[in-house]
Amino acid sequence: MITALIKKVKLFSEIALSIVFVYSIVVLIATVGFYLTPSTIELLIKVTDVAIYIYIFQELLRFIFAQKKVNHLKERWLELAVSFLMVLLLISPSFLSDLLAKNFPTLNLVEIHSIYLTFIDLVIIVLFLLKSTKYLDSVLKLNLHPSALFALSFALIIFTGSIFLSLLEATVLSETTSYLDALFTSTSAVCVTGLVVHNTATHFTFFGQVVILLLIQIGGLGVMTLTTFFTAIIAGGLSVKVRFLMREYLSQLSVSSVANLLRKILLYTFTIEGIGALLLFFFNQKADNNNFFDRIFNSIFHSISAFCNAGFSTYENGLMQDYIQNNYFYLSVIMLLIVLGGLGFIVLAELQQLFKFKNWKRWNYIIRDKFSVTTKIVLITTFFLITFGSLFIFILSLSDKTSISSIFNTFFHSVFLSVTSRTAGFNTVSIELISVPTAFIVIFLMWVGASPGSTGGG
Image 1 (cartoon, rainbow, N blue to C red):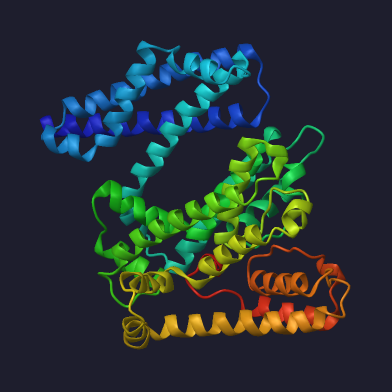
Image 2 (cartoon, one colour):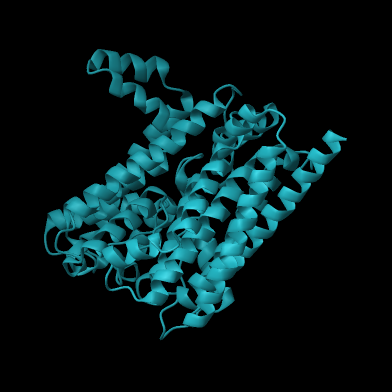
């Protein structure tokens, strides 16, 4: 009898949570994607309060009917923490609004309430998605081939991104984005190709650019990488099925090494992108009309876009912008990020061994005996492609219309073109002006592309 009641409570909680999740998605799309009137915002806030009550009630029921309350607290600590946050917001509904008004005096009441709604909805949506990762084993029971599962995950993210990019507030007031263009842009961002049908800087609003940035990050890392990582964090480990699935996805021979590599992938990605963003911010003093916020966002955007080999830019003329084109330090950071992202996570994991020693003899031993065949091939191929690509482009560019003032400038931009041609898609010279022989070199580099398992490997 008690077991049956517990099952009914669990079913009710799952249904209630799903309803709140769907409602949060609808409200989030309405809030960030459309221009709403103050009365509509007020109505949404009142309905959202009801959704919060439902969420807290179903979590309370789960706890009351839990047979082992200590284990319940350990398993659902994240949901309970969010419930506590929701209770605080209900007790003091004006706290977040007052905090925003105090720190951002330029915001009007509608904008403050919109931010409040967006915050609440995002918390619920992210929580639901994180907890949904525990059902990854159930998805695997469908017996889909790993390749089909990866393709479906990318298709889902592309479709979701296209919906958000087609919203009114994703595009500046003077422009419009058809669904086909939104779908193309979303596909290009997730598959990190860098091809665009609209200028990212002038056509999309800040919201639209943030959507593109998230799509680039998800596409560069891989949907399954993120999903499996959060499965390990939330569920406390990976099942055998998931480990075998990710072994194939990450091209690993050992199942036991999957979880460790996943942690390293996330660590390397956010560490490299974070350092890259700081360096780009520091070397971009004259840009963005000295707007501090713009400099921060553009630095983060270009760091992620470069490391993920995406080629998207928030500058109107891309990296051909006046204050960027001959900023050697800035472009050098971009090149370094492109190369690191294009090497692949397995190669980066093995390169980490070198930082443990300062002895060159020890380095020689590690490179000779510890590096895998894959790492050696990737490093040698990358070196020769960049080196010979740069030399050929430089020699041919001396007679091209792209030859820039001095020999050093021409050589520097030849190196940049060699690096970016393989997969990134950035450019500091007009591609339409390069000669046919140079174009063939670029085509060859594009054909080879980045190494398997890298952000550029898609």
